[in-house]
Length: 394
Image (tube, rainbow, N blue to C red; front, side, top):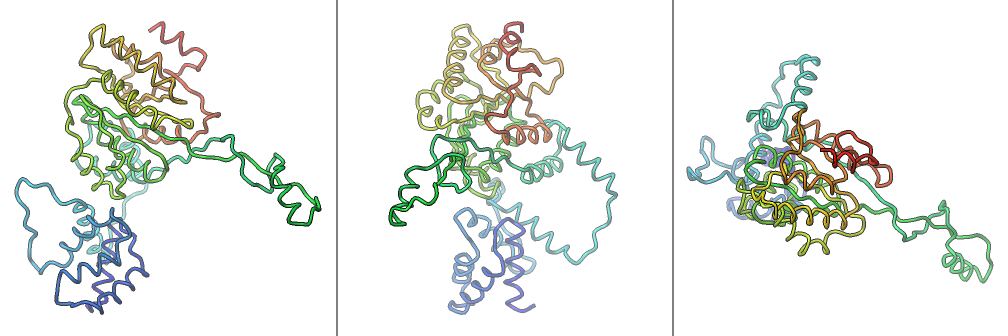
């Protein structure tokens, strides 16, 4: 294999791991290598890093791929026994395995069997999945069609087919034409994506669901603007910047590094109070929608804490356009809000949905894709007009 073929193979591994290193980047890498000492490993790595990576999110994957692809034959990468694998290592290993199998014929799989397996995976509870099923579910979440919901604003933009007449634009056009008013300029209302605020519970009771929900949120944040993500257990943590990495493995490691109360207790009232008073004015505006991901089981279930929880939920509901509560407990057909904390939260929710399998995440993506005006809030299948009466009965 020539050196150029090796560089092309390395770029193919990077592409398989999620780095957008195409033919143009490969050509730039080959030209950059003519300007450095090929015998110096650090110089080669720096030249390839500068030409094959497009942003800071690709660096961790590149380092893992470079260490695995350019190591000596038969050499093993030494890592401490208790140290976590480097970011991006799993994706790199999968990409290199796929590249090695490229020339092999894969055994055919019956379409009916694969479709049946996919349907079983869609309906399987995250808590019941094994390691291989969770890996396949993570890949399926990355392939979901994410929403691009928009809402109309009061601001106008020039539009030749707009319904409104733009008088200012009409006069400017007439001045350019020497005062001749030949035609009217038209305009239409601007469309923007409303902010989406996510509050995700990472307490012990949510340990089977929070990681997969975070994968969904990461995929959503990569395809949608203005997504603000907060995690809470016993405290509130803003992880919006940590989820900005394009590689999901790197993003999850960054989230784990900045969150100190993973799989601990739950203090929903206190964390909502902190969000409402510290972050509410910063992120709740311009038609913001809120996703609340929690089972609603608060450790502080006393009467005073329940009253505080209801007040904080009411304030959160007033400050957003729509409050959607995703609760894994709804996977049970006989679910009833017997816990005082759940009963205190329900009256202030527009939509109450389950979030325990891939099918529920697909339905959530479709729900978020609906426009603000066309979305019909539901509660336990009840129409919006019956929601308050239904909450009072339960």
